[in-house]
Image 1 (cartoon, rainbow, N blue to C red):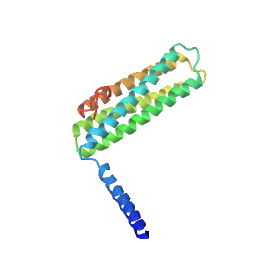
Image 2 (cartoon, rainbow, N blue to C red):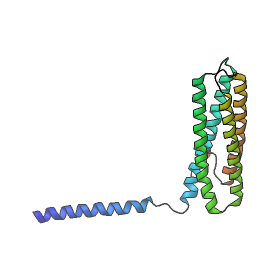
Image 3 (cartoon, helix red, strand yellow):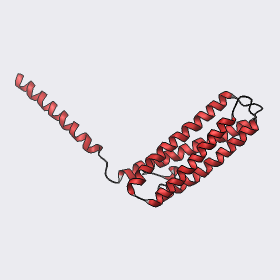
Length: 177
């Protein structure tokens, strides 16, 4: 009886170790997985964050256009959301850039530089919007800064869309890796 118990435990332990060693083999990605999956994820996520920042800038601008005073709470919420989207878009774009650099694709690197330059311009415009939003600020002046931010984000989105096209990443609503 003790021998049978020992054999059962040994078999279970052996099976468990075998399963553990097989899991990493299934977790390995093939060489094309990065191009198919990672680029799609990073491309689509940066797409969403750029548009999210733009949407918040639009909402904030509309709020300001109809206001007699600038609410510190709404300003904080809008600026926090815009900042978060810009930071996330930049992180996803950094991941794409790293992969493009590894590939040595100079055309895509040039397109990536344009996206980053335009995103940096949008970040500077966002800083100008934040600087204009002081207690007692004139809502029409702040709304003008929000409009400039929307325009900067439109240019960023335009160059981002061109980059995704160059990388053969279809728009998020039409794509599957």
